[in-house]
Length: 300
Ligand SMILES: NC(=O)c1ccc[n+]([C@@H]2O[C@H](COP(=O)([O-])OP(=O)(O)OC[C@H]3O[C@@H](n4cnc5c(N)ncnc54)[C@H](OP(=O)(O)O)[C@@H]3O)[C@@H](O)[C@H]2O)c1
Image 1 (spheres, rainbow, N blue to C red):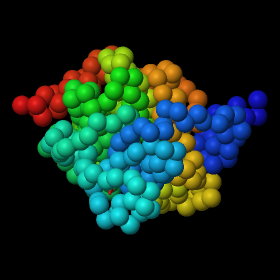
Image 2: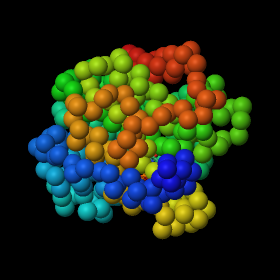
Image 3: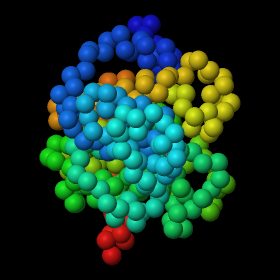
Image 4: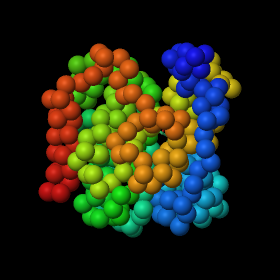
């Protein structure tokens, strides 16, 4: 009863105390769907993605991480663990759809950030929406189209609890009508990711889609994007390992994981705790059409 109240509070659920309380019920992870498998982790050069990549490699997987900055990768401990790197800017759609990629057994769409300044991509979207929503959609679409993933392969998307208060908005993706608000843009992109996870699971039943939020994790990105928030939470922020745990657990479930669900601390969670954030079917269709148009443009 007390634990349920703490979960409703969010403050004692998304933080480290929430992780530790939830982790009391965690069972040991069976690594048979990890060992000897190949994973591609976008945004795997720091923070949650790097921690996930290390845990995968430590448990016998072959891992390739992507990021925009090779130096960052080389300065990290990842190369020493036999992890490979591909330079890939998720907002460079040509690169996402055409740069050479090997076949692998699982894909984690984790790259993301919250840039302070508005930057437009192709005059269609801001950088947040372009890299996290369109870029990842194109990568998933490419992997399916080019048969880069085997049947039932896991495809995971790292979203954020920040989307809980956001209703999907598609009318002003370039911020021409309202002043640029990085937090709102981020929440909107994360909401779009949750919807895409459900829609893609429905459209491609041959793969195992999942989406999660990691809680509040003390990564450099969070400290830079929201310094006041990070300072206030201090030691209550989760570690990178704790932030990566549910993604790892989802991958380790293999095809037994029900496809299209949203996970937090290894449990399926509601995606609309607030009724006013529920978008219409028409808005969902518009999101899919937007993504498909971007895909068609890359094929032309
Ligand atoms: N930290 C949290 O509390 C928290 C909470 C909820 C959700 N998340 C989500 O968790 C994921 C990982 O975030 P993090 O906190 O671990 O941040 P991080 O340490 O900054 O990691 C982000 C990774 O994404 C890469 N990246 C960023 N923008 C990119 C782009 N346009 N193209 C390609 N790669 C890009 C970064 O490398 P380069 O900059 O070198 O490209 C880095 O490898 C993100 O999707 C984030 O939204 C984090």
